[in-house]
Image 1 (cartoon, rainbow, N blue to C red):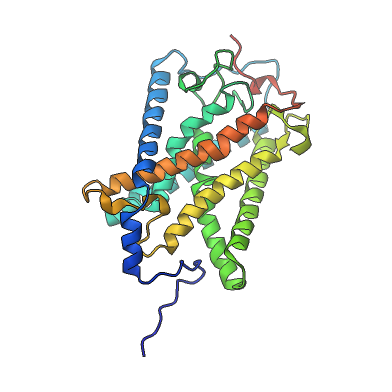
Image 2 (cartoon, helix red, strand yellow; image 1 turned 90 degrees about the horizontal axis):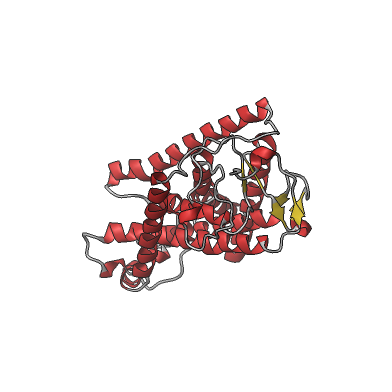
Length: 338
């Protein structure tokens, strides 16, 4: 008697299909991989444009630490520790998601493509202060200024120079995105084993709560211990510690959790797919085999770039327009003067 193969433990069941071959054909021939790949390519072009102009400018220089306030020594030590740990985390993810799969399989894993999406999407971080100073950066960060003047829609009266950090800022686009997806997939497997009656929406709701709490805890620890950054202007009704320079808008955790869930959805759908492809890779069979891996990578990068822009940066800026809680920040968390 032929036995039906069970899905991997804890993996959410794939939609019913007549056969794996039929599913692979559908996924391979139909889909918008070209659109997503185009967005990914445009994101890379924007990154190269902004960074290259920034590096070639006089603005590519550390922002001086301005007084009269001085940062406590123990906080400065904590900040350096966060920078060091963040770099280690970034290198570890680049190794496990990109270098190791390339050496083993000759191609990047889906997690690696999502990591690249976070790296490319980091250019959008400067959009946070494109109109006004909504995200404060500590001048004690190891930094070389910021590239915001070379982004579209930058306002002439927006803060031109502040201490954007590559050392911990870029890794945040990994551990609040790709890492959250990896963490959520493991959580989903546990929930499926422990509570098999849970529906798919219930599982995703619990994953959202997990990502929300993860951001809430991690960000508040970093803000409290290191003062690496802060939120100068928030909506008081949804802000913890409103008025303090440690104020924290709950909208931040909400938006970051949505981003994490969007990354999680892509990762989980790929784990359910018969051919291992994520939804944004559907249509790859229309692409020449020579270019399939490149187009696949660009498509995932394009999806991540779109999620970061539409789900996080645009809503963050919109919410900032209604801010009514203004923090009194120490001088080293303000934009550069002059």
